[in-house]
Image 1 (cartoon, rainbow, N blue to C red):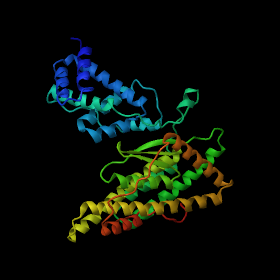
Image 2: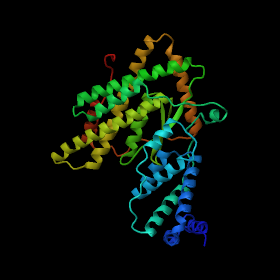
Image 3: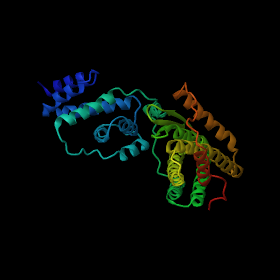
Image 4: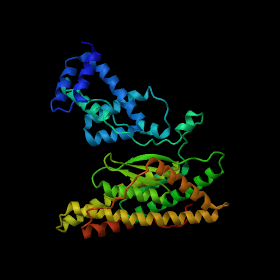
Length: 382
């Protein structure tokens, strides 16, 4: 039997048959034919290319495989993505960054061919049934028509924002974390204004783009609401896809970068503060860990969102008063563009409310932690 026929039979059995023993039967076929390995890998690259056509990106595939399967499958999909990348067209700096961040694709020593074949088939079954996602790249049509979007090096402002947030995450002093996070949000707002004014004067103003940010368990709902608050404070909009574990954030590129940075930093700060507060609660004889954490994060999200919006509005007002042109029409037009892009991508959305908020101590501690990480007005940066 040819190697291609072996793989075809295995796929017919494992990928399309839902019987309990289908996967074992197919794995036995592949394990008995070592010559089929190269064909099996080539088919995997085809599955990855098909996922790209359905709107998925490298980070999305790794995320969904990690959620649904195991570490061996994550290593396998990372290896497939790398193999496909050598045959793929350039897809921009954000895509390249995702390729650079892929986990190690080197597979550990196999124990037996049967187990390895079964794991590969489990991965391919998942890839085969992935749904289509909303395309993120608004400029693809223009690129095909002759336009070109170039990646820009990281600006000094974004580099400083990244450094400020890293210090906020590392410090053990709440007041210092508060000051550093506040400076970061203030600088983000000013950077956004600068980018808006530059774009308004450009011959071809930028169009809003989109990116996906993972929202991982546990307590995904609170994390999704936090991401929504960060996006709103930075002139972006977010839509959460709960089954697939990510939110799609729509906005202009500089704002998208700010949202990714600040959301990640606030999560790190929230986790550290929650762990510390929870330990103090246990030391006092209280053991309601789950309800405490849910209430803590809910309060943290509520408080942080309020302060983020206030800080962004204050910084924007300060920047607008010093601008030589009227800033309000520029920001209004960008807000309209973001809303229109969001509505094209997601014609139908629903609103979710946080559940499981029942622990008063958790709410109090979460509010206090958000106060420590708050992003209020501060003196102008030097």
